[in-house]
Image (cartoon, one colour):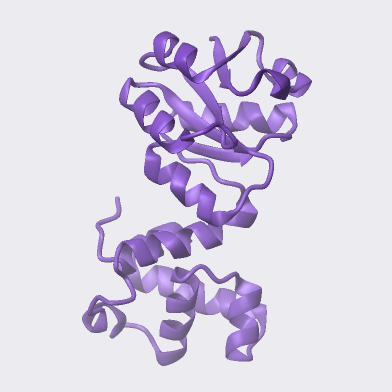
Length: 201
């Protein structure tokens, strides 16, 4: 399957060719004309008006991922909001690019692990989690479990939660495990969605 990389001509990176058998580096107009349902399209975030390009390409059915030379959580959220399924560093090794392509091709979302907690916190806030009434949902948790759950939903790592609540990371993990069990969720993402009062599968 051909992978289209939307970039400035000078940006082509050899590792992209090592990641995929067929790679074409194109400009935005070529990408609009060539991409369709199921095509893998990678958009550099230094392209002018890249969010609208991502929205258009994903609207055409392409599986879009955004590549950045300086990844951050705010840009990752913009990419996902525009319709991208993946977000990664432009200099990612070939095996990681192949992993992003595999996950996104199977309807998954791929964001670098170090950004995931921050992105989830942004998603929680975007869902209105901080302003919604959650008393009934949280009533099944102990006070400390509630503190841990809300901190995690806001995007804090276990280490940050431990420091904030003056407990050990091991204790944070124990509270999270109990919280997952009581709320019927499997992971941090589902917890964030549940506290944002969106149904999770």
